[in-house]
Length: 136
Image (cartoon, rainbow, N blue to C red; front, side, top):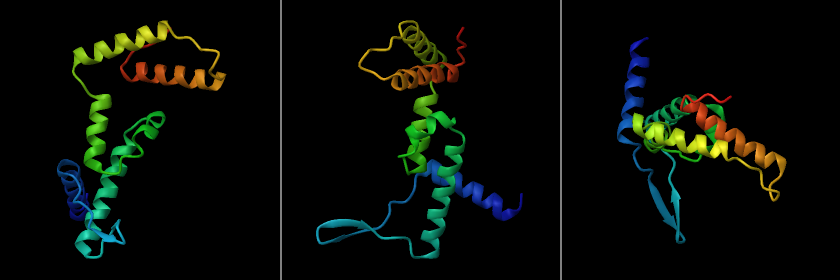
């Protein structure tokens, strides 16, 4: 890895750790508008934020990405990922037991379409799979 790449990785880690700098805003006719980055430093900071967020998104399973797509700040994204996928062994065990109970009691109400029922079941199975639970 060359020195520029090493610097970019270190800078991306800083953005994730410390959060992005707040964008500059102005109020025009009572409406707050974001001022796009203009200086080289602001543009570099924006590139780092985009790179850090993209790197975090690549680590999320495809079926889970829509849940995180609306989070535009890398620091907040990392916090959401840790909250969703993190936790200690006791927390994971409790979550696994709750999900297994939901799976065992799973039903498809008549008010739901087959696609909606299938999507809920798929989501439930994905969550169990993430926690290392295999289903028979």
